[in-house]
Image (cartoon, rainbow, N blue to C red; front, side, top):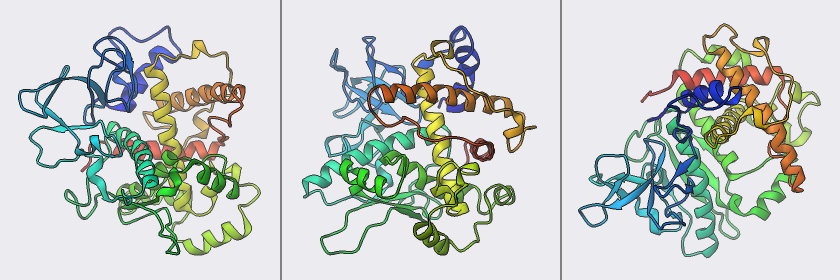
Amino acid sequence: MPQLLSSIDQLLGSQWKGSGPAEGESPGRLSRAYRCRCGSHVFFRNSLCLKCGTPLGYLPLDAMLRPLSPGPQAGSWVADGHEGLFAFCANREQAPGCNWLRAADDAHPLCIACRLNRTIPNQDDAQNVRYWARIEQAKRRMLAELLALQLPVKSRLDEDPQRGLMFDFLRAEPGGMRVLTGHADGLITLNVEEADDARREQLRLELHEPYRTLLGHLRHEIGHYYWDRLVRDGPWLGPYRALFGDERADYAAALQAHYEQGPQPDWALRHISSYASTHPWEDWAETWAHYLHMVDSLGTALGFGLSAEALDSSIEPFGPDALHDPDDADAGHFLALLNAWLEMTMVLNELARSMGQPDFYPFVMSAPVVAKLQFVHLVVRSARGSD
């Protein structure tokens, strides 16, 4: 599998501040930049090239969308540039329209993304069908990045019942109990009405949030999962507490205070969002989500050939003094990633305003936030390839 951070690091050096990709460097190795065999651009969610009609399938362990040819057995496919036979996820023809592939000899009918689902919304309801499709699009994008970062992704249902991951996508029945989005012991629950654009926008305004998306929800909740997996019981816990605070503080009381009294007026000096100031757990989850935003978006931009020379922008870059560990061997690479992200989002925010849309990235980073982002980066790096 191409390692996403390594790919981004190589192109940051050769493309963002250089004259172009280095010799032999293929931006197509990066997430989201794909071409059909006919040469046309194709995109992450595509299952068919609209120009030549070639079937397409996503290989999650290779982080690539590949053109396909029929295999020797019914329902089997051969992927360009890959040995072996593949089959589509059984959810290809269902509401999610999943384009992910699995090995043809895999007895499980679902791909590694869809097999994480414990509960899906009632498909007899047409609204639920639409909601589930939108949720799965966001979930696949998140999981593709986690796999490209080489983070552990195992199903709690049939692969790792102790430390694995699973999803419940629920909708409250009329007069029934409210469904709350959250994470608990490897289970991520999402209220499927978050897939209703009007309802989500209403909640965004009511809660004074500058940004609220399905992908943002999933990246936040998966952050709680990885805190349990990577921080809670290991050597990162002490440094985490020194940087984010002591998570043993009363969580319920912290949430109540946040919703009743609001955040402290100076929250932006230390946190990426007002919600991050609620409790150290939420600070971690918000910072984790922003790290995933940054890596995925910048990787996509570089994969499509965007370079700093194409942007007439100037920022005050962060230096080593803003980092959690300025002596880390990877500190310079992390700063390059972060400062390239800030350059890109400044221009993208202006593009959004030119279209009368909200800012692409409506957040301002402080030095303490940069230190927390580097901490997440270090945890991710240490977890590569772990079970």
